[in-house]
Image (cartoon, rainbow, N blue to C red):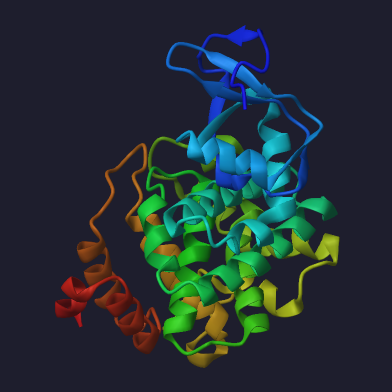
Amino acid sequence: MDWMTSTQKRPVHEGYLPIYVHSLAIESLIDFDLYVFNGDELLLYRAAHLPFTAEIRKDLLENKRNRLYISADDRRRYQMHIKDHIGQILTDESMDDFSKATIVYDCAKELVQEIFADPTKSGSIRSSQLFVESTVQYVLEQKNAFHNMLRVMSFDYSVFSHSVNVCTFSLALAQAAGIEKTNELIELGTGALLHDVGKAKIPEAILYKPGPLDQAEWKTMRLHPEWGVELITETDLVPQAAYLPIWQHHERRDGSGYPNKLVGDDIHIYGRIVAIADAFDAMTTKRVYRSARTSFSTLKIMAEQNDGFDHHLLQRFIRLMGPAQSVIL
């Protein structure tokens, strides 16, 4: 195939984004332009509204082009393509696991950002459920899925990356704890991905404050579990069990948590799992006002919090994070 399919040339600049060739579903209709980089500039390779076939992918890969470029203006169209075809992409045996993990992670962050922009939009919530279903299948079927996700995780804090990280940690911990039923993992994963959705109602001055919150600000912040449940209830799309992580991820087994100061087994196992994942990611993530803690020091702090976290689940999580952490037990 002639790479010069068009004489139209574009300079490489911040207005274009690299994408994986494997992220384009075979036999799908691509509704955005695709570009290749020839070393000096971008060339239009394939115009929008044309099918992407197996022959086209084969030609690209044989020419050692595993990346294409899209206009930044087409970012949303590209993310919609990923969401619509995530099942096919994740079952593509020709794609390596690291590439799959990268696509899952980046798409999940975009999805969470879309949800936070309008938490009551039914289309976004429905997309989150379909996305979690495909991701759960990927995690169940790929032995190293969790470790590949760890490799692509971002630990510079944003509420979007945090939500995806917590979902990933939660699914891995649930499996380690013996939760194997697909429907239960989907319930948990959906709730974990949406666990902080109530923060969409918190003023940005509080949410992104470059320093510790004062007492009044903390009072507002602690309303986000309740607000999250209210927002998702309006959509009437999420299974009841998926509300549990949203409602309970700040509860602690010794009664010191919020919003209801639940004690012991009054906290559902979904809530206990997401509480561990949420606390771990929050402490190991870099913030404007403090550096990230190491995973070792974070797990040590969590292990020393008496009966705040489920001890059995925390042991599982510590083992999950690597043999080097076992001295904490």
